[in-house]
Amino acid sequence: MQALWRTAYKLTKQFMHPDFKGPMRASVTIKGKLEKFKIDMPLITALCNPGLKERHWERMSDKVPKLSKLFVDLKNWHKRNEHGHSNNESTQREKRDLSVESGVEL
Image (cartoon, rainbow, N blue to C red; front, side):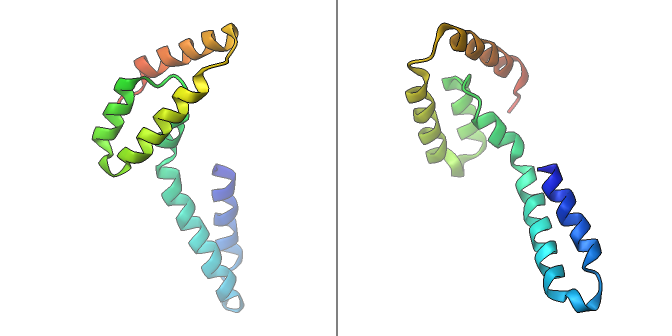
C-alpha cells in the first residue's frame, strides 16, 4: 500500500510540467484515492482476522452501522471457513483470537 502511494506521489512530482496536465490529473486522483483507502486499512485488517468472535462483530456493527449487512456476511463467511482446519491451524487461530481480544479496541 505504501509503495503504491509513494509511486503516485513521485508521479505527481514528475508530471508538474504544463505539457503533462492529463497524466498529472490522473496521478493526483490515484494518490487521493489511495490516501482515502489507507484510512480504512485497519478496519479491513481487523475484518480479515479469523479470530473474531461474536462480541467483536457486534461492537463493529455498533461503531459502523452502515456496514452492518457486510459484517453479517463476513461473520457468516468466517463461520463457514472455520470447519476443516487442522489442530495446528486451530491453535494458531486461538492465538490470533487472544491477540484480537487483548489488542483491538473499537
